[in-house]
Image (cartoon, rainbow, N blue to C red; front, side):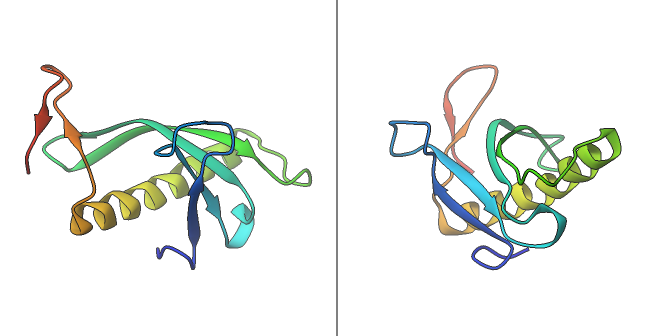
Length: 106
């Protein structure tokens, strides 16, 4: 996975907040899908990621049956993992402890 090759991060067109973003997928079956990730959690001591991926836009010709949705969710998991790792390496992530609500330094 690589930003600008497999996906692009863009301003969320449905939000007035400058920090809101969406991901535009650029390759394969998922080309031109626009996804908004939310409720992102890093669990199991950094071994798993939980998230909600809302489809903001999809090409009309793509039908999303149950199996296709599962494949899209798996692909979104790869994308969000890549984004989190990249943001972490650049030092732009903010980590909040779910129990305390306080920022955590890693």
